[in-house]
Length: 546
Ligand SMILES: Cc1cc2nc3c(=O)[nH]c(=O)nc-3n(C[C@H](O)[C@H](O)[C@H](O)COP(=O)(O)OP(=O)(O)OC[C@H]3O[C@@H](n4cnc5c(N)ncnc54)[C@H](O)[C@@H]3O)c2cc1C
Image (cartoon, rainbow, N blue to C red; front, side, top):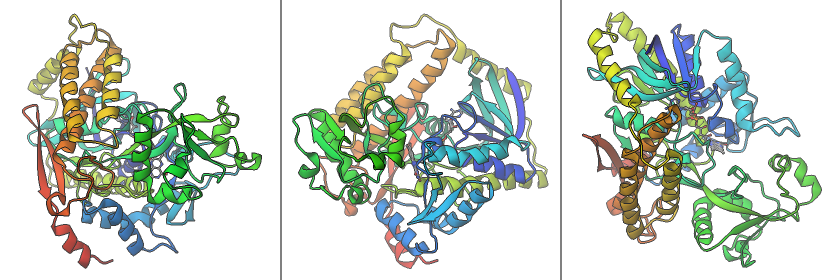
């Protein structure tokens, strides 16, 4: 087993992780960054549309606060929202200082794309950061998949993982920053990177941390649904010539009462549209038609992006579907990005609290920027503080290594497997998620989903990794099944509809009974769910000022 030592380990190389690593290095510490792929690649950040919501010369902090809380429907963590809003412009300035081309626009900022460029805004965003990283002392270990956080004597002391070639790594670190992103790819239909399977949530749960509000999943109405194409989002602005119809030819924009107003609807009625489209796709195919869009409109983003594809988007209608976009739930942090486990910090989509029951568009990148910077600084402060107090720890003691050697052997133990191939099981889990933890949920189907999940879990237990690939796949299966169970169970408890969360059998928001956050914990391997009252939010909201 390979052993490494560092001051700060950053898990994940999206926007949150990149900024945290650069900040920690500025504080003069040894930083190691790991990610599933090449640094910056395979991240949702690289797919992002590059919109940051934050106050600017025309959009005030008060407006940002109001819009964020309005979306969150009473479930936001006010102290985090306050930090987001106060530090947003400063974090964007930091990104500009690193060389990211960002312009002020509307309710915040947007990546500046050269006219005619077909590069994704997210790629333009991370390029200068990666450049900085390569010219820094930060050590990079791409392709290392973290399987466990190492927790000893009530504090985090590093992490354990396997490199893609199967070599096990035990990393001792004085502080760890978790920036593993969300979990959109646990659903059959999603616009995330394929590898964004909620590892960070599972790592935190297994390390004894609670997670919150996992039942709140954000869907986006329009993503490509053609079988052989990636399910890319179809971004606005939509030209007025766009048509949307079902397989019988019925005009869905008419049916949804949206003719001529699609660009506004995608902002103010995004969830209603996702629900309506999900229901429509349950009874047949739904098509997007761009054949009437005039030539000149195809020259500009986002259409020039579609133009690059071999698929004849300009010649014929194509299948679309809503898709999972973002996870509102996750790990609890304080304003310094510290979790309740000493030494563990978290930033980015893996974190819970800012968005409440629904995320305001553009707040995710701002969250990554603000809490990525704070997380890196706080982790560095934590390490310096320990040094001042002369607190040290000896992770690689003989006993400790024996314990981890045993654990590694369990991971690698080969036994006769079953006929279930992990990739088919993963497909089954994703289908189950799409069917039962969909934009439209109800008691009967949630219970059915949990029953079906229980039988898939039994099949997962019997998968013994015969190859290295299977070792990683088995971990994915365990993580996805755990997360899915949390979403289904949490959804079953919440007998109301709020924000992105819709129960067909309880279609109204119920502030009397459900102004609560859902708390998930793993107790002796069992998932436990409790609820925390949020009634104090209303009072705080009234007295909240900048
Ligand atoms: C198509 C699309 C467009 C979007 N557009 C916008 C937008 O315009 N504005 C906005 O505000 N938000 C947008 N979002 C949301 C936003 O992009 C994401 O929330 C944000 O980029 C997440 O960044 P992150 O740093 O938290 O994680 P990510 O960028 O997703 O990175 C996660 C990292 O963690 C690593 N990782 C995960 N598990 C492990 C493990 N076990 N071991 C090692 N490494 C691991 C991954 O390899 C990756 O490096 C968009 C999202 C999508 C999908």
